[in-house]
Image (cartoon, rainbow, N blue to C red; front, side, top):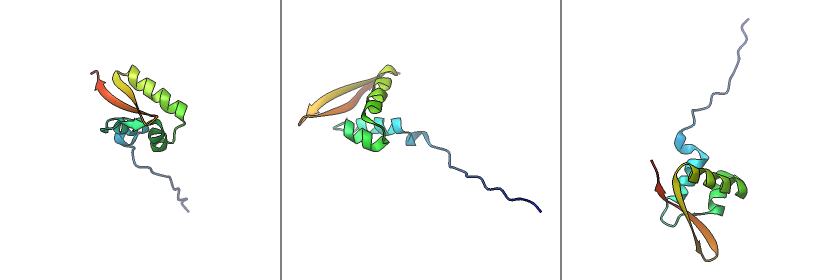
Amino acid sequence: MTKKTTTKESAPRKKADSKINKVIALMRRKNGASLEEMVQATAWLPHTTHAALSGLRKRGREITRTKSDGVSRYSIVGESK
């Protein structure tokens, strides 16, 4: 008798599906993204989301923060290549 084995095969994750790419896409919108929107999109905690923004800055992206109705909004305005 032969024994059947089953393995879970997962589809390869596309780069566009990564959490950091979701954050980048949110910040590229016309009005940018609030911290809460980024937290909801990634399921990260707020301090993790802030750390991700710092990482993006270190990688050459220029991020601005504006306040609208007491809510900070983050936008990507430039990227160094």
